[in-house]
Length: 431
Image 1: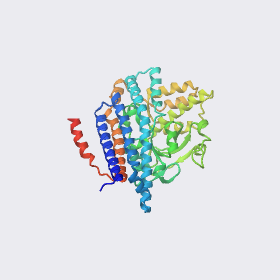
Image 2: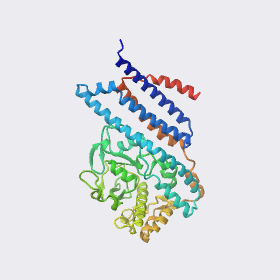
Image 3: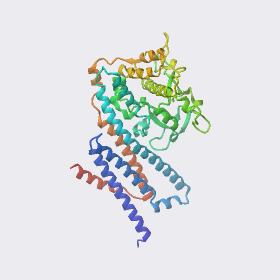
């Protein structure tokens, strides 16, 4: 005989299954929309909101939740705590994705306009200034990197044994020891939202297919990763050699925004100022790309120059010049041609407004690479690649789907029978 409580449980389970099915339908419709269109962004937002609904339904399912939590076995208590950690981890990622959708939409539209401006090698100061502003448009966006990027960065720089969710221990290059992977964040040096075409335009053909590679990533504590994304801290080289394989560059962390961060707490024992010029110890010979970090340095210094100009003081160049810009016969880093000349020119014009020294300006220009004509610029930039960028949403979708299914199975005791229905629904929708 089915009791009233059992009937409620069955109805709750059926409701969750229907919600999960509707989520799959929403995903199918989103995949069919044109990337970058208003409909695509609307459906993407609706999809993430549906994910949140299903996750909350599964988590708060009364029967399974209470039975699981009040079980007398320690194993189940530990499993509950682990599931709770995973639930809030994915909830945080969903919130970041929701916050990031509007920013991605705005940046995507600005990027298309910027691409049209820079199809010519002969850009004017106004166009260069517009492009610089496009680069800085990512500083406040919510960061939620694609799962494969996070996995690769953790495996490469953290030498993590188990990654992909919330388990495993990783090497922390700032603390120089292994910590829980939840205490670290994978962060992109060159923002993913600017796209591969923008990266290739700036760095040349050597940067092809490097946007989501580990050479464009770092593994940092969460607060430091956020400050790095906002260009308030950066990395600079402390040693360098022609033979990077045998004598790789070494790096140190520098605080760029002294006034805003110097006395602020980094953790319970350390301020950001105490981290200034800390050696960053990578676990292996795999290192981030020096050209990408030089570009990050340029962005950080320019934003600091703007802050200083607003406060009526000149940019503090001391301690920064020799890192990327050492002179003399033995100097090697400053000879690298890292960034396209039209982009470097845009930075120099912006720096000039902050009245930087002639030496500083001259050494920045030493890192420029010639565009080589209009056709090269056109060939390198090409068309925006929506398929590559949709992969990021597909990976986030896959990660969220796995987490939802595991939660449903754990707390609701359900199998995945809805998948057969989804398969039939796919055929109907796709014809």
